[in-house]
Image (tube, rainbow, N blue to C red):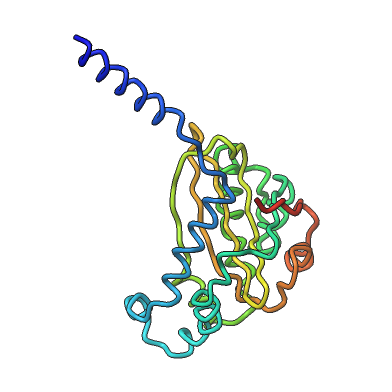
Length: 214
């Protein structure tokens, strides 16, 4: 009887410990995604699965060297980027080149278009760097899903590094605290600091703040 009681108490302790497991922050989730992206950048086998064009591979040489040196493990600064709905719709109008009346969209469709656009910011930034950069950044884009109570709205973290190109990780918030994260190398050399975003997009609807690195 005493042995059975001991086993029950041990099981209860393990159940409680598992139930109170500390949730990873968006910052940590982003770093884990960037670590996997670094493995991708260093792997010739991974690249050969998607392309055989040397010019595309050359776009990632600097990234691969930085990943091998461990630079991507220690960001110099991390910035949180959010955007108000009106700013996102303004960006959508600017990039689409169309005169469509987006305000007449049904609310559900409008919200979906806004979320898609926010996750496409990295592609917009890389679009001015040339076709090879677009292709390279697309190959090494990495995504994952997880649960995080911290994410109450769509947001992005810009991880910047000393001597290496930045990485933009977008976090799309879904139902029941589900989050889809997508990380992309920003190969645009004009992206020297987060304030460049407003100039590149040609709007002021983005809010940027520097995060305290743990």
